[in-house]
Image (tube, rainbow, N blue to C red; front, side, top):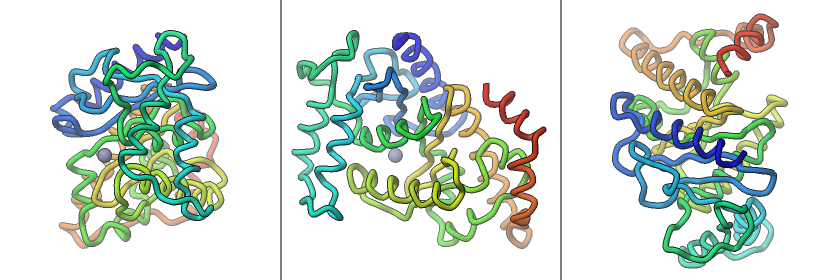
Length: 267
Ligand SMILES: [Zn+2]
């Protein structure tokens, strides 16, 4: 079962790393997938999505990855962990890739610095695959002065079908554990507001996270988010975006035939 998941994760990662799509270059981006109830696969530090294969992923315990978050939760009186402590805990969070039991011996392969962020995303209901990329079109938005205004509305129906009624918008935060805390809090706020989990997270001056039930869904959501970003950038040549009304967004998001389409497109 987990090997099959890993095969899908490899294929999804190579797709997201395809240079023609301009989602990432070099070692940018990271991906993950739920292996079973207790563990997940995440990209190892220092690997490239474009050429990644099975050894490019490490298997990690949810409990031990999420414990890093608790141990560094400043709002609960914890002190922030040093980079060295985080690195050590990430290595200790590894499990044996075949059995899912750990801790695994340290063979020098380290989980991505964004492992805790992936653990948070994969803990959301119906999320089995996660793709984090730095698409040029997305970062033209996230790095612009008008970022928050520009992503405050939806532009066309298929954007809503694939990417949900709104993205989670994360102000610039230091990558690693501080970013994981920020994303967790903003996802909770989003769920409180929309009564469902998000499909897309946009991180200021950083990039995109696509949350999918399947690997194909992560690819589709990423493609649509990038297309929507290109359309949005184009609107600024002709007076800026004309957003759909909240009523129109709600109508598309909840109508039965769109729910059907979402099921079809998402497979
Ligand atoms: Zn990144």
